[in-house]
Image (cartoon, rainbow, N blue to C red):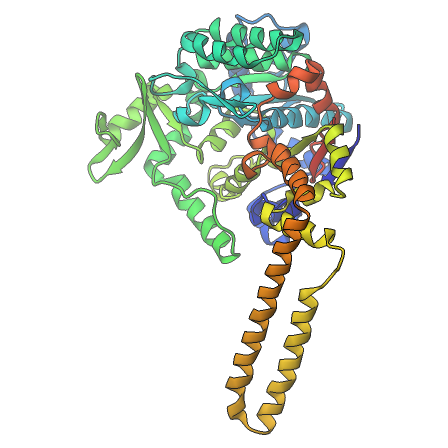
Length: 531
């Protein structure tokens, strides 16, 4: 087994803001605090230690003890939970939606990147404790995004008409979904384990929050991962001053707009645009945006209305009724966790970079931002097939039309470089233009027209030759595109489409170990793992 690497930029799957950040561009230096490297954690530890309350640690510990009360956990995990109260204990956090059966593969990559970073930090800074945390997005209400996962191109879908926070969705009706999934699986030991994992996690849990905790705990029980459901009154109470600040002063809107303006000036497209108020109101089976009016506040469906004094009073008495949106959630996270680093994907890093001024305004420590590892899993047989068609794995990252054109040209027995001919032609016409200027400038139009005509003629010849080579080497090209379709389903990254179950069937419980051994969180390259 060996790994290969490709820069994120060269994959053509990541935006320029993300690529420039991980490459350390000076254009982005003012948009974050400490750099994402081991040495920077020294100052981040000191900064967080000075700015996190002991009482908040105790509250967090009590919440975690309560949330794990119904799960049989190891002594090591109990010790990690208790250590949260220690001022020398810090977290590294990743977060994700409660995707059915983990959803796409990158769900696992996020968590493994987080676990591995805490282990590297412990080696570098042995006097401190570092705990990996998975933040469950239990307050999310976009059920469509999480209700299904792919297995061998089959869509395994949860049919439900429940509404509101997905973490509270009852999972007892997932039996028919499990039945469909299990019918597609081969009859072997690993498939039986998958069915049992689904059943124990979902069918035997009261809601999706509990089910996801059980599932993730079972997959990562050897690695002291803490799983947090932040939708708790005690934690929202810690966050309540920022909730009130957001309602009255529009702290996200005012401060992130300035950052977005600066990003635009540097030709970066913002990931998310803020709302005036970046909060939802939670009620039975609903999660609705809060909007402000001249005379007060209301939910967007107008079911709830408040004056300024009334809504502040509700924050004071029932903070659990208020839910941060995607831009306010990072501030909630950093308010309640002794956190040093957030690990996220390209889009997450991009919107976190919009928030530095918001953190500064509220005197919150801005965490180190680290991209989670992106991975392509390639089996040995697939590499052997690539070798037979004389194709590198890096070439498969090309757009398929460009890949076909490139391979058709490389396979041709007679090489003809049309780019070279076009360049030669352009140089000739440049000379003609200079002659025209010195003799009769009225010929310029004719020269330009003739250049355009001949360049177009060359392009047409190139297309005809390419088409002929595609026909001639059809079998070789189909083998290449077949491999690309296997590894990049639906013209997308494997990690964004494929569920872990496809690999678990072959590798079983060793699959998590294989990933953990080959994912290096501080390696800023796209990783290709040979299985």
